[in-house]
Amino acid sequence: MFFIVTKYLTPRGFRGLTLYPFVFMKFKTDKENLVFVNHEKIHLRQQIELLIFPFYLWYVIEYFIRLIQCKNRHVAYRNISFEREAYSNESNLDYLKFRKLYNFTKYLQKKE
Image (cartoon, rainbow, N blue to C red; front, side, top):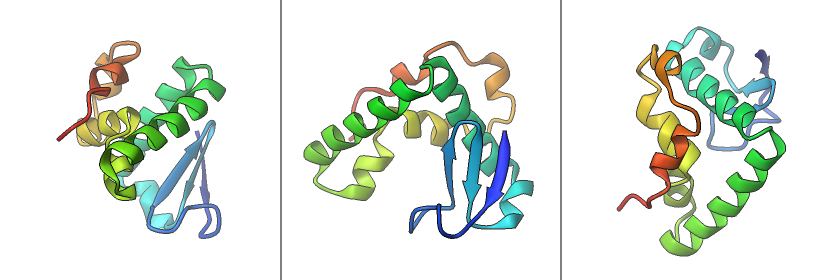
């Protein structure tokens, strides 16, 4: 995992973006934020288990499906299974030690 601090590659409204093996972040201080780093590590694990490119394809397709369902960009983003898994477990710093393979599939059901 390589951290790159940049305000230009991180989408507006977000603190970070993970594109294997890089984590782009807006703020240098986030390198020390254990919850933020764990969230991004969860995304790295998801990307690896889906062999990287299929992760991005799935992510984009699921985002558009959620956008149709929710009719709100932020709600659609928060309902992507990858994001739901990462947000639900970012505070558990031991999560990746015990995480089962393809665990993001537990989060496919749209959250109300």
